Each structure stands twice: as structure tokens, then as C-alpha cells.
View 1 (cartoon, rainbow, N blue to C red):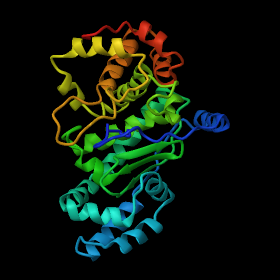
View 2: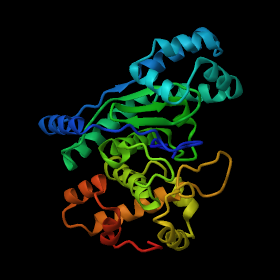
View 3: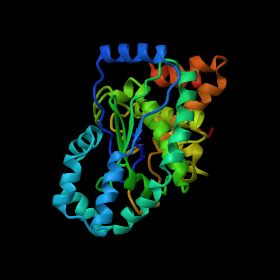
View 4: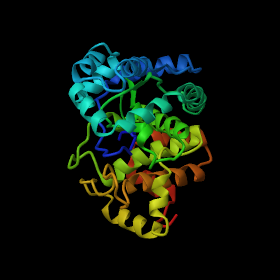
Length: 319
């Protein structure tokens, strides 16, 4: 949700922090995946349980010191999430004071997690069948400071319960939202390009490359989980599909991709993350044209040559 997916788009999303993946890690993980194709994902909710135990004990008003203790006693996933996204007890307390409804609503979303886990398990089994080299690190659900929706790196996917629960602009159905955002983030786990920390202006990054990374993850979410993580993007593009596509082709080589993704602004009706939508359309066009669907999915995930992929997709603006 590298962000929304995010972390995979994310409310107030920014470019998701990527960690460089060592070649040896890829080799070991790929071998393990091939040896054990049946996957039961480890979805960890311990931190959510601890947070809401504290929430109940303090009548919904834990102080910064108590929240610092919640963070200090958390799982490794929570500790990494806090470190990478500057989550502190003070900042959680400030967000809870500013928007107490966010945390009340997230308590309701917490009830969905058993069904989310069952659906994610089915989706990941499909991913493992279609892409045998898949890796399946754990998912951790935590409670943070209202953003980000989550982070993804080779160690796994960490989702902020309260942030994703509040992201109803992405999808009004919270259960679908959780399942499909996790599916999107798992696609990023498989993508070599998504494992790199690329900032705007980096010579390895471009509008085309980043859009195919994020749009490819959206297509994989649709393929294995029944829908994209953020169907709201298509709604905001409706009626302008050709114009958006033509602008994308003109700007595909730009190194500053901030106009095309990671540009959601809360409360704004302006289009955002249009690169996700275009990248998804290109990936879908490629897959639909391919005779060998498994090979097509591998190409979408591994994306060795973005320019060649665009040509071979047959996609044109307006489609």
C-alpha cells in the first residue's frame, strides 16, 4: 500500500519506504516457496488486542506514557513500523484527541479480522498456484497514529488498523478493503522493483516504471482477491480516460512522478494516483492478450523491461 497501499494509495500517502533485498534472501525465499506451495498466512493481531485492552482500561483516553509502553512491548512488526513512520506515544495520543471517532470505528473493524484472515488465506493460495516463486512473509495488524495505512518490505506487511479502517474513500466495504489492500501489498513483496527505495528524481524511477509497479499490484489484487485495492480511482478518471492516457504517454519518462502517484489529499475531490489506474490498465491489457497466463503474471511481477512491456501490452489511451 507501497502507500493508499497502500501500501500499498494511502490517506496522505507518500512513497512507501522500500528496503533493498539481498540476492541471497531472494534465492532462499524462492526455494522455500517452491518446496512448500501450500500457504497459510500468518496474520498477527496481538498488537491490536493489546491496544484495545489499554483503550478499554483507560476509557478510550490512554496517555502518552501508556502508549509508549504499548509500543515498547509490541511485536517486532510494530516496533519497526513505529521507527520507520515516526510513531510515538505522544503522536498517537494527539491523534486520538483530535479524532477519537477514528479509534472507535477501528474497534468495529477489528471484528472483521477473522473473516479477513480466511479470505486472505484463499487469495494467497491462488497467488502461490499462479506464481510458484511467491514469498509469504507475515502480515501484522497494528494500531498507530492514523497514518500511514501500512508499510511493506521483505520482512512482511504491516497494516495500521485505524488508518485503513478510515480509508473508506478507497472502497466503502471495509472487509473487501482489508483483503484487497493486503493482496496488493503481497504483490509488492514479489516485485524486485518494489523492493528498492526510489525517490522522485532517482534515475531508476520514472512515471512508467512506478506506475507499472503500483498498477501491476492492483491487477494482482484483482486476480487473486476479486478486485483492486482502490476502485475509487476509476471513478475519478471516468469520462477522461483518453485524456489521462495521452498525458501519461507524454510524461512516461519523467523522473518526477509526484503528479501521477502518492498525491492523495484528504478532503480533495481532485484526481489522485492516476498512475496506479493507468498501470493497472496496461497490466490487464497485457494479461488479456497473453496465451500463457502464468508467464504473463510472472512478467507483470518481475517487469524486466517497462518499455517493452508497454509495447507488448497493446494498450492505447482510452482503453
